[in-house]
Amino acid sequence: MPTPLKNDRFLRALRREPVDCTPVWLMRQAGRYLPEYRATRQAAGSFLAMAKTPEIACEVTLQPLRRFPLDAAILFSDILTVPDAMGLGLHFVEGEGPKFERPLRSVADIDALAVPDMDTELRYVMDAVRLIRRELDGRVPLIGFSGSPWTLACYMVEGGGSKEWGKVKALALNEPAAMHRLLGTVTDAVVAYLAAQRAAGAQALQVFDTWGGVLSPAMYREFSLPYLARIARELKSAEVPVILFGKGNAPHLDALFASGADAIGVDWTVTLEDAARRAGGRVALQGNLDPAMLYGHPEAVRAQARAVLDSYRDGNGGSREGHVFNLGHGMSPDMDPEHVAVLVDEVHAYSAR
Ligand code: CP3
Image (cartoon, rainbow, N blue to C red):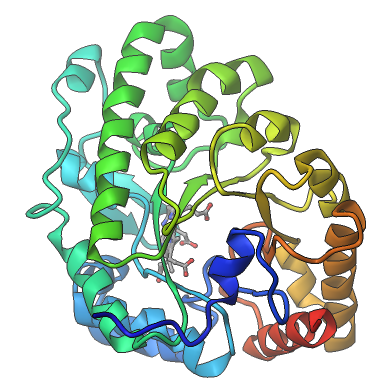
């Protein structure tokens, strides 16, 4: 029998149940802003070596929890492990971010793709999940995650990051049937990947649709939203909630609220007051402090945290339930860990019921 959770605020908030204070975790809470992360990375040699060694992935997952009273841990890994396991050959170029050795260059490349085997090619991820659960010993829940089909397809077609995402948009426009076959295969892989993380012990699942917001509304409704909704439907389970995070998803919130997901993660381009009012209690909301607010001085960080908490309450009929505090996107390497401590403290103190 797994140890019962000592702190289940995060899971309770995702179910919109009462909590003693608003739970908080931060996207990219494990990373280069922490000196202990930089030391572990130096010793391991590379980011991928860290992610592919369960003991190191576990250590790095726990690092931010040793410093801050965060209410959830997130698996240390990357969204690009899935295309890597599909044979694209992931590597990281210093200062340039992720690259694939064999990006998708033709319809034939797309039709040759297969869903990777979770027990072999992605076993290191499941081993990390099992190890982290053991080491957490019920302190806080563990979040598993995946990229969204559209966001993974962006990297698979471009071969890396991009400003314009011209190749993947051209594929969607010129070869829509092939694009849908690609998104279908990637969705099958994402569902299998998240289900395997859940079976290994993940207690909540988050899908990162980082690049859905670069699409026009019509293209978003065709190439991102239906696949997000399929994931939410196929993973529906009362015990393990699904969070759909999307950078720039504000224009699509009404559709996302009806998608079947338990919670929607939003960035700072929408107020939580507006989002909560539109959600009308159908889902929990996660977000949405602009990560750059962490560059402010500590009193400014505290004031910004309070503003986010109050904005949610104002849109949610005066109640703070159903809110998970987070940033609207990930942290950056030059952020000050002291400011994170201040942020977490303010969220808990100010929202205490
Ligand atoms: O949130 C966490 O603490 C969990 C770990 C996590 C990482 N990547 C670790 C990581 C998560 C959830 C991700 C998801 C991810 N990876 C996304 C979606 C989230 C988002 O930011 O929208 C995307 C688009 C990627 C792809 C990716 N991985 C990029 C673009 C980069 C380079 C970023 C950079 O700043 O150089 C990575 C590498 C990566 N993934 C790092 C970390 C901590 C930096 C690695 C290092 O150099 O040490």
